[in-house]
Amino acid sequence: MSKVSEVRYVGYAVPDLEAERQFYKDKWLLRQVAEQDAMVYFAAEGSDQPYVVRLRQAAVKRVEVIGLAAETAAAVDDLHTKAQDAGCRIIFAPRQLDGFGGGYGFRFFSPDGLPFEISSDVARGSARTLKRGEAVPEKVSHIVLHSPHHKETTEFFIDVLGFKLTDWIGDFMSFLRCNEWHHRIAILPGPPCLNHVAYDMPTVDDMMRGIARLKRNSVDLLWGPGRHTAGNNTFSYFATPNGFAVEYTSELERVDDSWTPSIHAPRPEIMDQWGIATGGPQTMPHPEADSGLFQPSDR
View 1: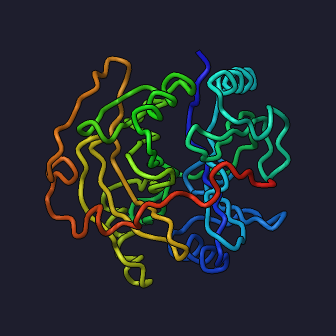
View 2: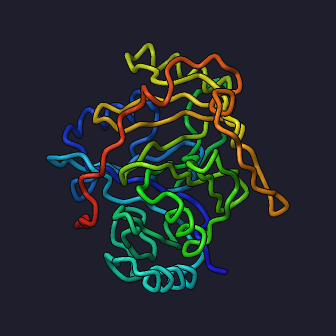
């Protein structure tokens, strides 16, 4: 069955491009790898994805595109057909991509209006093994979305894009996987928008050192440090200068097809096993409908 196999990147439009650029380069410690066609691209040191963040200047902040991977061009074509058959608005049909990294892919709007790209055959970036204590993000770990129809959106990712259900928290937060990692997408109720993007740190120690570095650079910790139950991953949440939430995480659980989904009853210990985190969901950026719903980017 053709399916999405990984999360590639998120493309953002931001009013203050220079502040966002400096954040990802000097504080978050991604590596700027290209600047072309008025867009800036950043890679993660431990990933061979050509980039994990794309930035562009705009009057209003928005998510321009969420990039997902498929293993082959045939899988891209099949997923395009499935998206069409599901009634999705197609931004463009499968074609050779002319942006940085290239590849073969198509773009579409989810039923909620968020823009997605599914691609294969992109150029591979350089990846290196990180040393303990560098406190540098390895790769994108997962993306959390809000949806006003979160159960239907969960089914869309399963039935159309080939994700598998891993767990629920109550009946309000679903965790979906597309490979061996516990979740690559999670979905919450709310207006259609991005909740946050998480980045894997090599160890808990690296995450804690990353928190310290951000604190020294005047980046406030919004929520954390702690350890979630669903996925068993550690967490620490921050906001970029333009107001997008980002997370350092580590030790996300690996699962296989023998996994049986669980429904975790909501309680404080589910959100933070350790019970030591400062802040909470209420301290995160307030979700509001993305300003770019059903509006295609020109690149």
